[in-house]
Length: 111
Length: 113
Image (cartoon, rainbow over the protein chains, first blue to last red):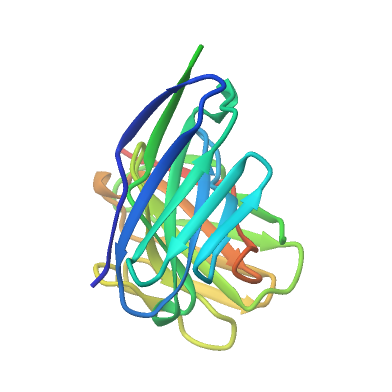
């Protein structure tokens, strides 16, 4: 089987930096992705790590350590519109390269 | 990334009936996936539907309950059969065109009464 663990809720102030951690146990690990989902919306791609290290895309960065089965999403200069659910997802070669999602982290950005 | 048109966006169905959800993609893609998401919960993979082969179902999901069609590289359907209130959920299709190219349909919100 497989499991992904991430915090259920995080609250941060506008303009701050927040880090959402994700640990995983899985066979067939190919890479780790991060998705954002607003209420009533579809998940949208944020970042992907296939190799160890940091990937930076604007205000969002993601990190992966394959040896530690650990990754994180870093959101900088938080804005109110960043209030959403954030999912880490393992890209799994044993599932036909499907994404297997963690339970999600609900981020609330306050003024 | 591919753009997906999913319909219907929502439906209210009587128990015991079936609903077919359609996903149309604006480009040819090999990998297509179907997920279920309870409100406020994570996405659970139902099956992988690659064109030219039978769908592969995850544990807990069976073909008789969730038959899938994938007639070509731009279209797929998922049918929720013999529905019960426990099937009330959001159903989403997804396609993958590379590790950074996974996109999702807008979802079908199903309520079974």
